[in-house]
Image 1 (cartoon, helix red, strand yellow):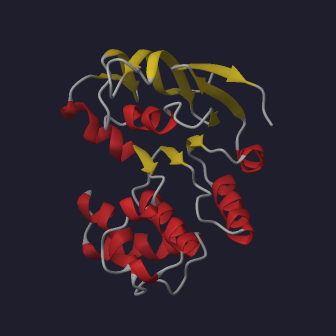
Image 2 (cartoon, rainbow, N blue to C red; image 1 turned 180 degrees about the vertical axis):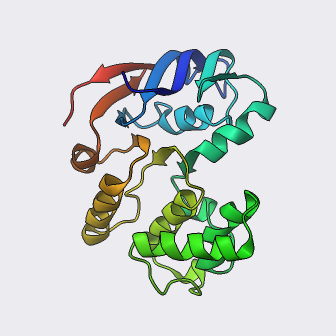
Length: 221
């Protein structure tokens, strides 16, 4: 069995006590897995990703990440470095004036020198086919371009796990195929939330469904 990276055991979470989102949810991610998470609107798929990196605190259950039980906020900065979360809305992820600044922000925050951060930024943008985007003004980019830049900002942190929340949002057909090629070229384990089953069929090797607060193994598309 490949190494275990993330484990949720009996996790419950509610924004409103009367309407729990997660009810004793169990989940395990192993190295090499690309897990598609499906489920109806409002099922809690985004919340599930946020729980994994400590952005939402469960009312019950255990979160184990990279071999350690994580309980307090102080446990999660390491998790967020090692598990990169791509937000559903790229505008929630991009906040610097230029593309290069957005992509370099994470490496600089990890203590890389400016020269190292520039090289990581160049290499990451090249890998995603975004050569020449360094000085582009972020807010002027198209929705699809923002999506790719947001992914570049996540990848620049060199995470071991990718948590992708609706990664095909705002993508046209050509850019979606580009996203498929990029994800299939990456070595990281992934948890991919999406309603696009055709997309998931091209990138996922395991499927789970979140419904009524619980996760269960599901058939692929």
